[in-house]
Length: 306
Image (cartoon, rainbow, N blue to C red):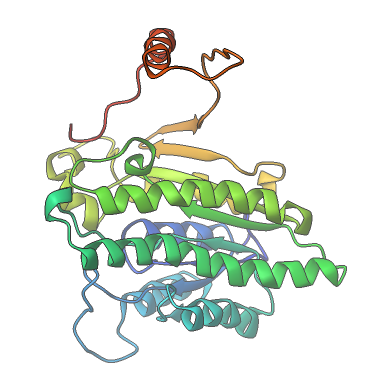
């Protein structure tokens, strides 16, 4: 196979279904060799039914890639554990002798309004999304740092997966929104820290039909009877493949919102209108000044579901 990612080794987490599967297939179509990770859990993180080890979502996607003439192996470890994340990187190195791109995609939902959200639901969602991004990133970055220090500067790429919920918030998804917002700043920090080792780190905020979104936004995510399917997960993957390729040189620390045929570069927190008194404010004066400054700003985007 030849293409944009010929010769590159790519790891995709949560690649057994939905967006992750679409990413893995798109990378393979561009010549990449894949490590397909999936723990096989339900949309709420519950473990799937027991069955033959070979018959897992990760194994099925890997087999699909091989059947099309590509190279892929399955990985079924829990990437939100240090052992699972380390073995993810080890699998790539032991199978292919290198690692070039990491796509952090795994996640699930446990939606509740805040007053009904219990600690277990908070911890489970933050764990898989935020910790499940941090640990693979950490272990991949340690490998690339060692490569750079040995004089083998990589053209390494990390693509993290945030959400519109992380950008604007989403009613009933306080745990998910908080985790996805954390992924955005983790992306910025990683881009700054890892640039010296030849590692670029970017994030996407995709809108697409997956097991999670089909349940939460059923009407919006429904496939049309005919015409362009704007919510198909395959629409998101071309940008991810480009970000994961050597062709994206110089692009790092960026967040892209992508939906259907639309790609948007998101611009994050920046200093807006300001006033400096040069001394301490009184509460009343601080409030009056805050209202004056707010009148000079654009209103924030609407929280999803509000």
